[in-house]
Image 1 (cartoon, rainbow, N blue to C red):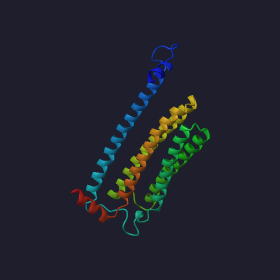
Image 2 (cartoon, rainbow, N blue to C red):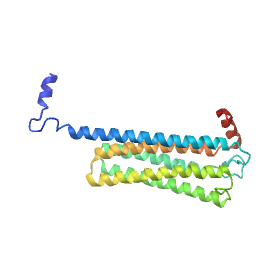
Image 3 (cartoon, helix red, strand yellow):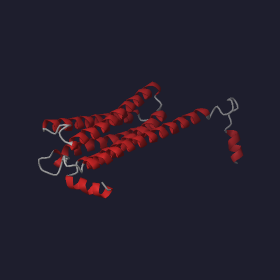
Image 4 (tube, rainbow, N blue to C red):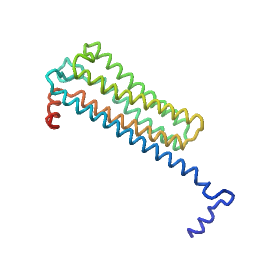
Length: 226
């Protein structure tokens, strides 16, 4: 039975193997892109891990003053940072919806979801800039305290990776406008969604790390052997 079905699927008017070649090439490209993304995410993870180690070591110095704990410290009330977290979460969710819309070949769904992703991402970046401005206006300058320096450094690095993701995101939209291939768009958005989820995880980790009080840092450093 299987031999009969195999015979019926033969296309004698095409050179042997031609009917499966485009699919094979596309699959190989997807695998290559996925592997490249995994490697890139591994590099980012190592970078933030090394920054975290140096941050925890620095918290044990006499001149380190945490940004939360006392009522007058800026992150004792982290409502603005929670708001930014919601923006990034919504961007991560909307890009999943965009991927599903591309699978269903729903042009309207793709447009709405991608617009939402772009909007929430811009709101997140704008919110982060606003927090930086508030810190400066309150006298928590980048050079005034090691905790300040690390906050600007780590959130700045995270923002740069967000901007890099936005550029890739724009490229996906541009390439889709040229060929209108929903299958290709879905494949690219799947990788973008994975990247956005990763950046959300990194941000939540930084949120926890940077808004800790002095006692929290002391406990973590002691646990890590610093």
